[in-house]
Amino acid sequence: QVQVVESGGGLVQAGGSLRLSCAASGMIFSINTMGWYRQAPGKQREFVARITSGGSTDYADSVKGRFTISRDNAKNTVYLQMNSLKPEDTAVYYCDAQRAYGTSVLTYWGQGTQVTVSS
Image 1 (cartoon, rainbow, N blue to C red):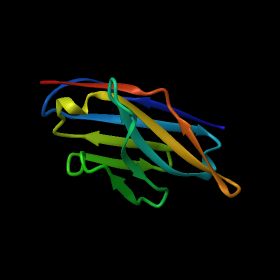
Image 2: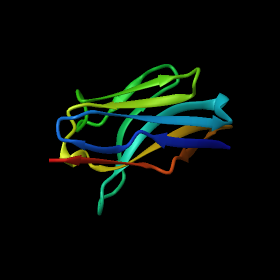
Image 3: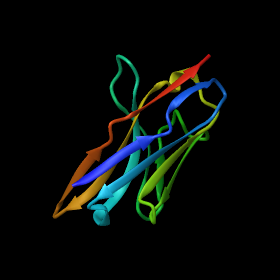
Image 4: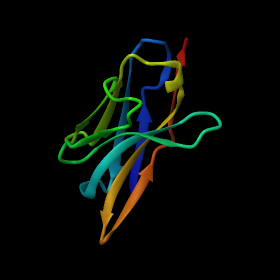
C-alpha cells in the first residue's frame, strides 16, 4: 500500500503564489509517476501536472508557464509551485502516486487540499 498526503493549500489573492506538497509513504520503492489533479465545484477532476521518477514532466495547457512540478526522491515528496494564480485555479487539488504491480499500475490518491484564489 501507498499513503499519499497533500498539504499547502489555502486562500490567496489573484496573482499570488502557493506551494503544494505531496508526501508518499508505504511501498514507495516502486512508485513511478506522481502527479496533481484538481476538481472545482460542479466540474470533473482534471489533470494539472505529473512527474516521473526520472524527472520528466507534463503540464495541462491551462497551467503551463505558471505552475512547476518538482520532486525530491529522497523525501518521497512532490511539490507544485503555483504562481500567477487566477480565480479559475480555485479547486480541491489532489495528488496521486502510481506504483507498478506486475504488469499493472496501481494509483493511490490523497485526500485533497483546498486552494481558493480570490479576485
